[in-house]
Image (cartoon, rainbow over all chains, first blue to last red; front, side, top):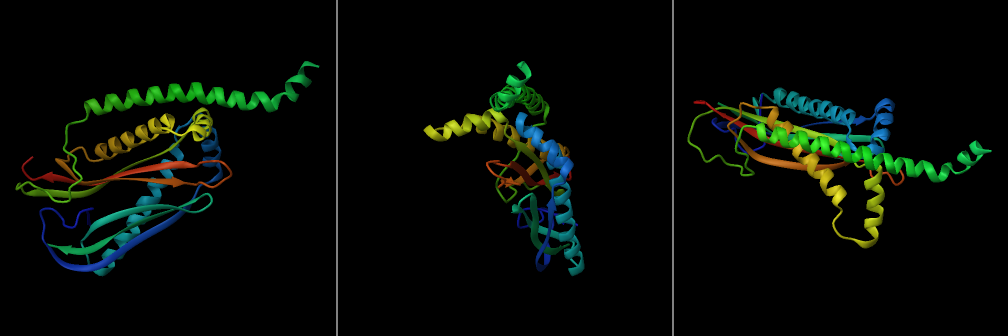
Length: 104
Length: 156
């Protein structure tokens, strides 16, 4: 599966469009990470636990989107976008969406 | 007697301790981080990065791939306090500017590092999201995501 965030797959021709595919996941932070993060809130800087949490969540959302595209028979997703939102206190939603296409 | 006094004045010295810790630890962390960012930016190969969506190059493309880099940061206690004062008079919040600048450059470096074979990064985008916010006065954390389509040409 080829993913790009432009309208085309550079170097390949799109032969078929399958429409929108998306994948999302809502992740809650756990208490251990939260404790570390509240300490980090004093000294500032990167919250490594959260960075990892969101990376995992983003790859989960992406793989759900890819699974949807595979079901349609696509071999690439173009114009991929990511969105992050804070849906509930202590939880974040990660959304990945794009257009499933078939390339030569 | 003395312990009573220390305990009674805890309301005063605990916040001061937190502020002091935030100031010194935050400052040294920022200095270390900037040193690391500068060193990595210097040693990074000079791969063009564009926000354009189209490729103006006739060379055949071998590979096109979505690449991402992200970082979650939080402000320190001293800067948070300084920000509450800043809110009274307005103007640029330098503490936040430098924090977000560090985070942006870090996310960009991580994105570049994730695909070192790239010849060009197309349609570069950067997004900022506030996370886990809304608990009292806690401004929460900020996530920066950098993403682009990495292109590798066939002849390189």
